[in-house]
Length: 199
Image (tube, rainbow, N blue to C red; front, side, top):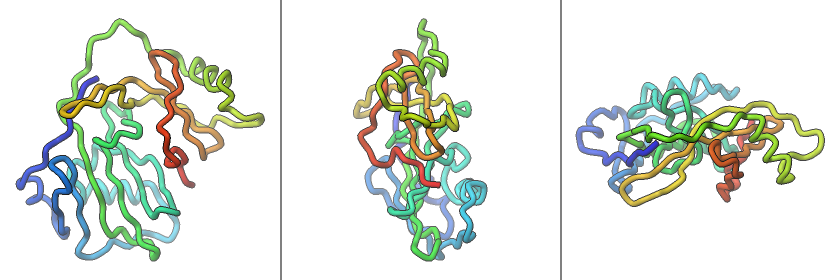
């Protein structure tokens, strides 16, 4: 699949209410809420997803990925046909949460021009992804695979566009995310401590 980062315009900013927004660069919105939004004391993906849909441009195009209590962030990745774009800096919303559990600001990027590329390759079955992780020693003894889902990750990042490839996300013990290229069967290492979704 190919895509390109959206260039945000003044018309986009006109749609944002109760926010002080500016462009960090042509493809990144940074915004602060005039009145920070209080979240429930018990974290709810549904609550935060609903907030995103009501307050962020294209909010319904993003899917919850993780909450990081240490950094005070909640991360959403863009999705296409119900498949998430994992770790994609060009299709992300990061909400910033204060110590008193309020959404204070966010940063947003968005991919447009999504186009499936013709390929003769078939997606490897999820069992192959698990087997690869086991062979590489990434699944520890007594680990439990708690979820496996197909999404996309960036294969090639160019200045004006990018190529995304099908990717298996394997969740281990509800805490650790491991990724495998669903065409070639290679482990994808995003070199980030953000690989861990926080409960």
